[in-house]
Image 1 (cartoon, rainbow, N blue to C red):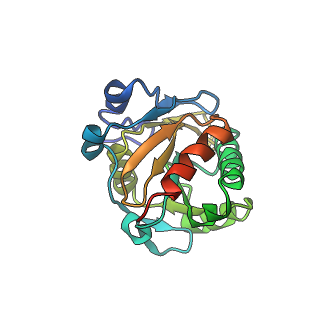
Image 2 (cartoon, helix red, strand yellow):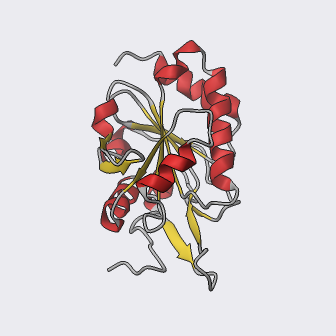
Length: 204
């Protein structure tokens, strides 16, 4: 049973073992690593899920089937890593050509206690890149993290302004809803853009 101060998703390191090492649990400054997900590994990692978006509407990953997805985990109070991740995603999209407008960017909050839909709605306004921000119950968020073998851990600070160590990877999901690659949060935008172009060029 999960506690409020610590949530470790079982098997978080298995993705790294299967595809070359992820280093997925990170603070707000440490990267993960880039890796491709083998075809035979895909069924074990990723998949459809349902959460609640910033408009307090239920969002299903399958609702955007046919469009590529960039997804990352974080929280609105994240001091540096999450804004930096969004900056790199924006840079990659700007390099991916006119078809980049077809890409859906998802931000999954691992801090559902504080990140209500209203908080998320205000958060997405701070970015120029269209962003779907998602939250849910603790159980719903934990299930999505488990699907993608992500981890997060609340770090008490002695105040209400606690921190959350979390997976720092950017996940690239193709038009069929399959996890194709993941990238460290500080991956060069050019590298991410190249992968995006390859997925954008594929037929739905």
